[in-house]
Amino acid sequence: MIRPTRLTLLWGALGIALALLPALVSEALWLVWLVFVALSALALGLEWALLPAASALSVQLEAPALLFVGEPASKAQAKVRVGTHAGPVEARLELLAPLAEAPDVRGTLVRDAACALEFPLVSERRGPGVIRALHLRWTGPLGLLFRETTRELDRPLPVTANLRHVRRMALQFFGSRDGDTGLRVERFKGDGSEFDALREFEAGHDRRAIDWKASARHRKLLVREFRAERNHQIIVTLDTGRLMSPPLGGVARLDHAINSALALTWAGLRSGDRVGLFAFDSNVRCWAEPRGGLASFPRVQGLCGSLTEAEAETNFSLGLSQLTGKLRRRSLVVLLTEFTDSITAELMLQNVERLTKKHLVLFVALRDAGLDGLVDARPSEIDDLHRAVTAHELQRDRQLVLKRLQRAGALLVDAAPEKLSVELLNRYLEIKRREMI
Image (cartoon, rainbow, N blue to C red; front, side, top):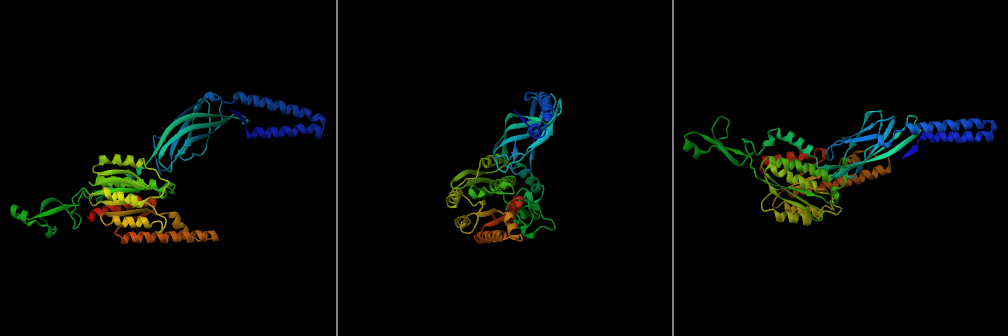
């Protein structure tokens, strides 16, 4: 489709003004208007002839195979090549949800050369994204006309949980000594309860670790060495209710929770524990029996990738009671959830308190830095004061709920999204060192 540019419209307005001159000033000026019309027609005809046809353009799209939710923008590069005269070009990439809208890009088409146009790709949610089409608009050499065309692409671009985040956490934690808790022999008092081996006594060993019967049999002093117990059972429990949908830092709360859950799953399997997955909102969404070995990680990853936020409120009575019925041994239950105030959190508190009587509960909540900012900001208007008071009330209710959870025996992780995985893994390693499960 060919359309006039703004310059052509202004030129036409000037022509209308010149057409009025013979009537308002002098009849002799009609020659000026006639010359203007002839020049305009010549310019438009020349522009039409030199304007590259849509068939003269070739489009090649280069895009990543998938996106990780919450990661900085990746780049999709559309290479546009024209074989005739060229000029400025504007492009828009049509993206389907959950991909965020990409800004328009400008470039310059050069004859017999490829023009690379780069579009940032980012997504706040997981899902089957699609690069639908590329819309192009370019002008002729005189800037009087532009042509529009659309190239259908239909390129699938799935958005998945952030595995780069999991790999980064794995490198950070498993490159250290703490990361091998349960794999390496721990020789520090209280760090292990599982017998590993006998070793000849040396200066510096704890004398209480001497095995007198074994020493008598071998006729030399031997000490017992222990390591942190393995084969614990960890249940990663995800709340997929309505409150997990609002974004923090541009990413849905559920996606933050899934990223941290996958990091914890990798750490648990790497440390020799058995990890299971349980997700619920108004109903149970998925249940995966605890299994050991890193070969179990893709199973948990696939289940997490299929989870979406529900529109209904979370039914903690149903969800946690069903989880309790599925557990046959004492487990570490890691509950990643969200609440707004102490009143709506009452049912959650009651059910978590019942769960702590048989299991070790690690309660994980996301801290909203925006809420903290409203409390700390100096108000300049009455509305700012109202927002600060409301935010303070929400913070106070949040602290009351967390204190009740602590009194009930639950462990807490309350961290901002960017620190959540680190805090969660640190607490998990601390639980293993202290043999709390």
